[in-house]
Image (cartoon, rainbow, N blue to C red; front, side, top):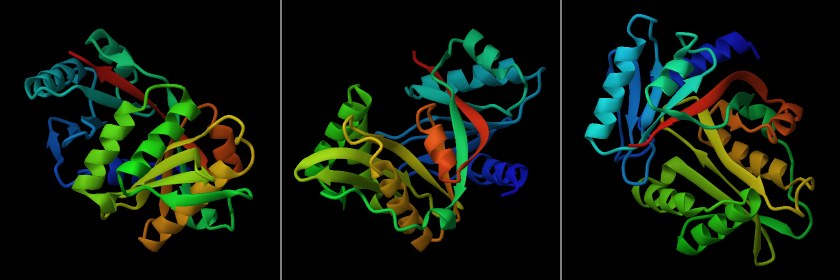
Length: 258
């Protein structure tokens, strides 16, 4: 993989050329910024910017005024290669709060098309209804140790508004959910986004996480996506590197709450 070329393609395809994540969302381009305005339960924020030191503060203030004016909390998704170099400091000074930094990792879908089956006694099932959503929230809460209400709201909204744009899956051991993950598929893009992969303690290190990646990769390949994209935590980065994903940049969510 040509890392520089793929990163430039990612910026053009998923950020500067972003498409709405659902049918009730919209993408707007204004003043060196591409912003996403989410629909019900959706994500709102700045996806891409190309700013100079002279205009960055004014553009940040414009985005704050816009999103607060429509009543949306929002996120400025800062990438490590964005300009100007001190953009993160400027966002903090404007009232944003930085969440944990993650690593932007990209893999080729074809490289993940392997016979990675879950361990004996575990099966992978799709999430398509309210009962499945509740099991997915349960798995997420047990895996990550925090409230999963946000995931419940997101899944209900996305499955109702645009079910073809999201793939949600569970790993079940009997009647017990032991892992969950989702994939976001934006029509016309070349990158499928892998999100939320988490396995409950006691089932880690047994191939469940790998099986969920391979399962989603097969779906992405069938739908014509060449690349898989992950914002990886420090815990998942080494696993993904062993699977052939390449670290291309960093991402840090800067959140603005009124």
